[in-house]
Image (cartoon, rainbow, N blue to C red; front, side, top):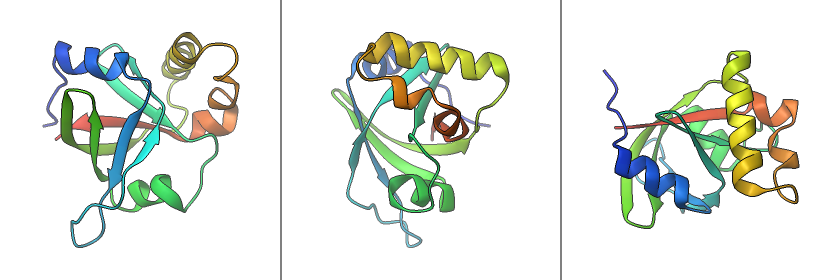
Length: 125
């Protein structure tokens, strides 16, 4: 059974401009963290890349779906779940969250079909 995010954790993640994510290597050690945009929808935490790829942080967490995240006041291990575009309701909710959080000058690349297909949910470990 997967753990749930607390209201405080969700608030910290939601209030952060970016989340630092470090993927894990096969031996369990952490790679260097990279900043990514993050949104929350209901009790879930979601990240996307603007296009699906097999390299970089995204490719690494697809290969080994474990990572470590950090925002101000919170640092924890997560399980990465590839939800793709998900159900239409999920995609719409995540799209809305990106629009709301990052505004008209920043969100466009994060609500395309390619970005939606690269949607990942981060579950606390």
